[in-house]
Image 1 (tube, rainbow, N blue to C red):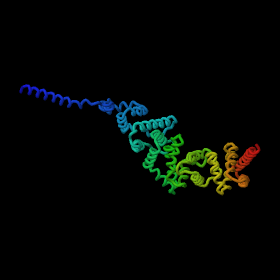
Image 2 (cartoon, rainbow, N blue to C red; image 1 turned 90 degrees about the horizontal axis):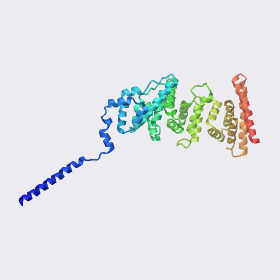
Image 3 (cartoon, helix red, strand yellow; image 1 turned 180 degrees about the vertical axis):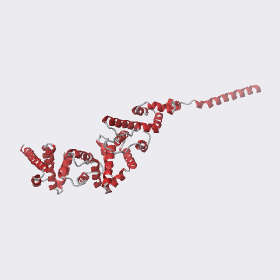
Image 4 (cartoon, rainbow, N blue to C red; image 1 turned 45 degrees about the vertical axis):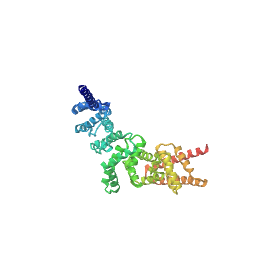
Length: 420
């Protein structure tokens, strides 16, 4: 009986040990996910970095950007690769002075591909790190044929395309910090040194136009950047800055083409007056300041700017002046708008419709008659002014003849409209 008991004890002990053995080995049989399996035994994990870099050297920028979207591990390897000094010196080209159109086009296309590479490979990095990664490598040359800023503008546009306004606001703040953009704008407004002012103005125009404004073909994006540039300043400074960015560079040349950029910027800003902080009153105030920079404009240039801005904006300005006790000024602008239509080849019917719309803002018949009489009297006054100066100046005499032709054409259209 004793021996049987000991055998049973022994059997129980062996069984207990076997259970202990099995339970101790069970945790080793764990299930691995696909990502864990790739991380632990990935081919790229075992590949030396130098060999992987040799493979990447054979790929184009677009191919590397596509490869960076395969996995986080490959993205990390590519970020290490494009962080090397040798890659930066080879791929971030600083030879921006090209003589042929094909070379300039190739360089800008190269930086567009660079933007796509950085957009995809630095997706998880903070915004500032993304921008710091490349901005310090760019040339800041301002020679007319230099495309350094244009290249960076294309790169930046490709990098942040599709970002929301909050992220774009961070980009703008970052650029202001590293370029002292706002400080330069402030110093420009208080500078009395003509050479320094001209240099600063040229720098601001080139940087803001080529980096922030011109690369965007869509109006909403370009409007966002223009508003960011103008937002911190009072109305007078807004007008000065808008003239610096889009005003005529030289006093000579064709007036039509010289004012077109400025008219386009005004339409860009006020084509959507629902934007917070902007209204019709702010438009009129800024225009009043604008036509006095750098000195008061000739009325014909003001009229040409209004014509380029289109019917809606032109009507808003003229109707506001007519209703606010500035009827003589509004009438003089109307006469010069008719002159500009004749000079620049616009249909006179457009000017007739404009006068008809302004006439409708007056509620009574006597007010409308007073408006028409004021316009006709202004025609006579301006005609006499041109006649007095036309005796000694051939160019003024030619303008005088054009004014007579425009008056005849305008009144023909006007009478034809009422006699239909």
